[in-house]
Every structure is written in C-alpha cells, then in structure tokens.
Image 1: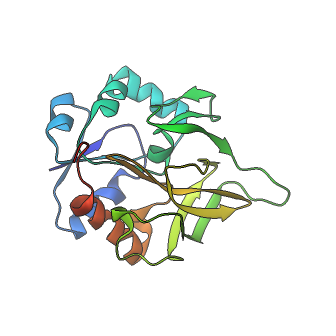
Image 2 (image 1 turned 120 degrees about the vertical axis):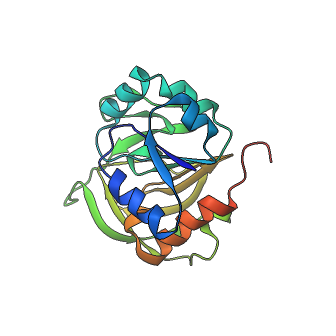
Amino acid sequence: MVAIVDSGGANIGSVQAALMRLNVESILTSDESTIRSASHVILPGVGAAEAAMRVLRRSRLDELIKSLRQPVFGICLGMQLLYSASEEGDVECLGIIPGTCRRFSGTGLTVPHMGWNTLRFEKEDPLMQNVADGSWAYFVHSYFAPVNEFSVATSDYGNVFTAVTRRDNFVGAQFHPERSSLSGATILKNFLSGIPPSGQ
C-alpha cells in the first residue's frame, strides 16, 4: 500500500490517478500508523511551503516523515519541503536535504515557471532507469531547490536548479511525474520498484 501524506496539496487527485494507471493502490492519510506501515510514502504538494509545513507540524507529521525508513517521494512542493528551508514564507522545512529553496528572479522571467522543460542528468540513479537524458517533464513552480551533491537531475529556467534529488530513501521531483507522460510514469514505476528502503 502506498500512503499519500495529506499535507493539503492540490495535486493529490492526479497522483492517485497516476498510481491507478500503474495498478497501485494508495490511500490519502494523515494517520501515523498508516504512514509507518505503508510500503512507500508520497509527499505531494501544490501550494505554499509555509502553509504545508504548518499542516505537517499541526499533525505532528514533520518528525514522522523524517524518521521514515521506507522509500519516500516528494513531488513539486513536496520535494521542496525535504530541504532545510524555503524563502517562501521564510519557513524552516524538514531538513532532510541541505539547502534553501529560493524564488525565481531575472529580467523577463515569467514566474511561476510553468510548462515543459528538459532534464539533464547529474548522476546515475535507480529512480531514472529507462528515462533518457534530455527527457521532457512538466513543471509548475515559483521556487527552486539549489544544485548540490544530492542532485540527480537538473533543469534550467533562468537558473539551473535541482529537478530530481535523492538522499538515501528520500527522493524528490520538482516537476509533476503524474503529468509528465511516459517519462513521468516510468519514474513513478521506478520509485515503486527500484528504490530500496534506508539501510539496504
């Protein structure tokens, strides 16, 4: 069973639909025991980092997520919440991956970054198996995560930013795999089958 963390994100229905297309059962939940017992956990999100962290802290899910040993996948805002902090609301996030998410800025740059962009691989990772370097993915975001040692793939929109990240059993995609056609479906399938739990 895949647990989708109920953090108030707006893309939950599309994530559930993508899992259904892969014949994978999921449940939207904020229940600690359900999340702990799930084989895989997805942290979705379309919205503001400050509001999402408020929901997680109110439900005491922030510390729970950090303690999980099974594969955890942060999508869009869910990926940004894995980082130390965000300029959006000047909020402290989960701190699983170092770095602060910052707002796009630049002359002539439309924010949010919305639409299709290519992925450039920085390292090999099971999450990207059977996905070609240069594949297209669908993005909707105003803030971006920095490139660092945990970056698996990057993209470029005025700034080069992390598009896919991985630290131990925690992975993240800044784009929406559930809306990214075959490459997104492949990444979801890889997460469900190819990402070992922490310690393996």
